[in-house]
Image 1 (spheres, one colour):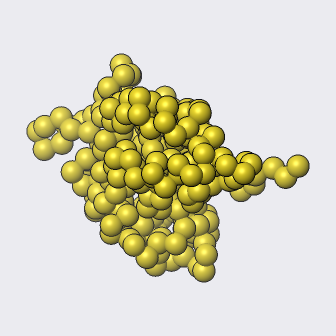
Image 2 (cartoon, helix red, strand yellow; image 1 turned 120 degrees about the horizontal axis):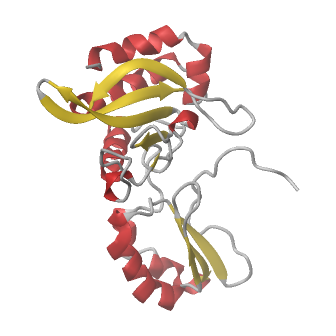
Image 3 (cartoon, helix red, strand yellow; image 1 turned 135 degrees about the vertical axis):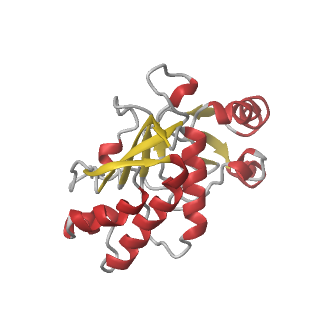
Length: 239
């Protein structure tokens, strides 16, 4: 058997024909409070009508519908939930992961999931030319439940007083990965206030695109180039 050493990449629809009349849908969506209404809808209407099984809780935080009859796939893909959580999302939003944040965790002082969705969708729009995934993991505290240390860009949130007001702030690390080339991300010095985080992320991605070699992943560019260069890119956005 062949072992896959990289995290799962998003797959197109329909996915695999297990036998003549069944397929599996791989839905890139973070399973959290945002999807409560959507999951209830899938469970009540879509799942009972179109699929035999629904699973979640993967490392990618995806929802998977299994054993969908082939003739029902097209109708299922028109459901409202897939307009908010598209089956083929962008190369930022489709690979992002966050912890539960302060919605359900007393350790996290910040909200994480909605914020990460906003950030990654903005990056999808800003860099349509991107041809490889860039994984951004956002964790709400130092417990690192979202594993920022193995992301292309890892964010560890907290709170601090900035210009007289308490606001979310983020420590940044770059260049982490899993698989055959697994390594922890390299931390950058300082923290970024929430208001400047979108611009800071865009600057890091722009630097990657300017320095990358053909087909090179984000973490590969980080490892090949001086960490001081990445620190210099981040410096204007630090508190």
